[in-house]
Image (tube, rainbow, N blue to C red; front, side, top):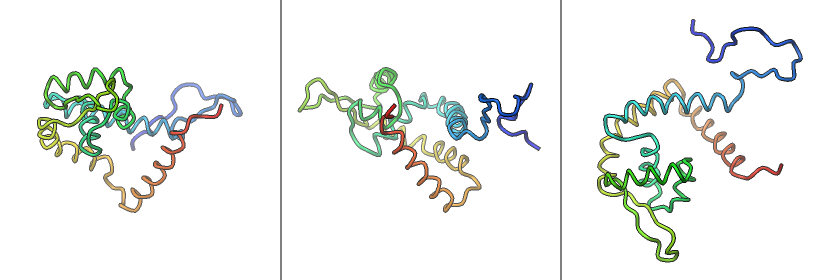
Length: 164
C-alpha cells in the first residue's frame, strides 16, 4: 500500500499544539503537489522540443487569447514580469513570438504568436494532451466540472487583494 503523500515522520506534536498542521489536509499544499509534479514531468517532456514550461504557458495563452501586453500575459501565465520578459526574449529570438509596439501607448508592446509558435503548438499538442489526460485519469466528467467550478471561485477569491 502506498504511503500517504505527506505521511508524518519523526516525533509527533503534543495534542493541542498551536503549531499542529497536517499538510495532507492543506488544500494549497495539495495544489502545489499537483502543480509542481506536473511541471517537473512536463519539463522533461518539453525538453526535446527546446521548450520550457513557462514558454508553453505563453504559447497556450497567446493561442487562446490572441495578442497580449506583457502585463496581461504575466497575469494569464502566472509568471512574474522579469522572468516573463527573459522568456519572451528567448521566444522572440527563436521565432515563436513577435512583439509590436502598441499604437495607443508607445511604451507598451503587444506580444503575438508567430507562425513558428503555432507550428510548435501543433508538435507538442500530443505531449500536452497526454499529461492532461494522465492528471485527470479516473475522475468522472461531472467531478471535473465540480472541481473546475470550485477552483474558479477560489481564483476569484484570491484575485482580490486582501483587506489586512
